[in-house]
Image 1 (cartoon, rainbow, N blue to C red):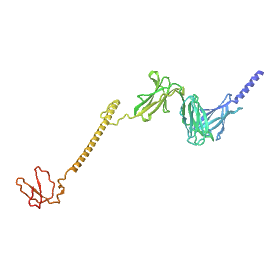
Image 2 (image 1 turned 60 degrees about the vertical axis):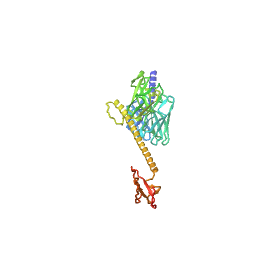
Image 3 (image 1 turned 90 degrees about the horizontal axis):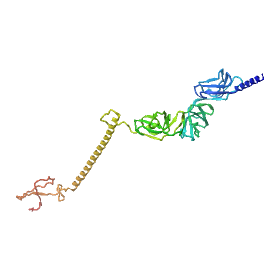
Image 4 (image 1 turned 90 degrees about the vertical axis):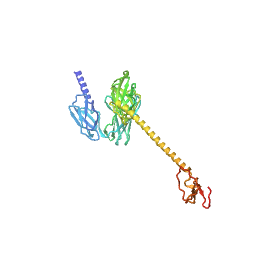
Length: 432
């Protein structure tokens, strides 16, 4: 009987002690967006069937919740009044659980988050995550989502005004890699947060040998041609990632084996446009470690230039694209060459005509300046001033004929030889 009573007393004290071991949890998360629901569960190792839920903190009061014969409490659709600190206790002789903070998000506009110097980090390096809010908030909270989907708070910082908050993560390890988001809040309302920022993935690189990156058809393509980049590796990665100057263009499962047995993946970019021009790199990784990538491939400089369509007229209509491109290219070249010939010939003719006209004008002026004025003067004197008697001498008879003086007029050259003689009118006889 003594030993039986001792065992029963131990059992009773153990049961009483278990009553004090209560805990409170939230599913799916204690961070709840506006309008959604959350389930609070009070855990106990004792066979308690009645629990009471208390809201112990918060800017707005909320009446206590009481559950009968179950340990689950569903809140929602949540509002700002549901934000606060909660505890639970058993109906008989049990202390309350540790407080659980229920945060309601979406109360303020979401902030922005950026990684400096970039989201790709080597092991041991540091990365700074900067959070900035478009509204006045003096509190920022940083959350991390691991590869298993578990969220944890990585930091909390108070600022002033519109000042951003900088969270330094590092030295970087595999546990530090993951998806990060930040929230903004007011210190006066610690359980009311903004909507989450857009995610930023912090990835560790250099964990394995680098792949190689190439472009089908070469790194220089014409606008409109299909562009496909190929990332291949000697190691059997099951994921490849293509980045254009730090911007992730997506991830693709390995498409098959290429030359020499290397796994490869193709990234079709579609018809080439000038926006495709840039520097590309690719990485390899495994699905079991999405935040651990290989070393970067060598950079690929892709250039999209020109156009595949020709504006030159064509006299033939080939049936295939290959047939069309070649005649159009030759036709365009011949039209350009013919245009240059015509322009050169026209310019030469115009210049030659101008030179000939210039020389002709100079010769005409020189002739006019050097021609004697025989048709206008005689012996340097004006014929209209003097009275002159001209006699036409017939050599056969030597007879004298007298003419009335008339002004000198221009005469046209004659084929017959004519001799003119001047006489003095005051003399009776004149000698030839």
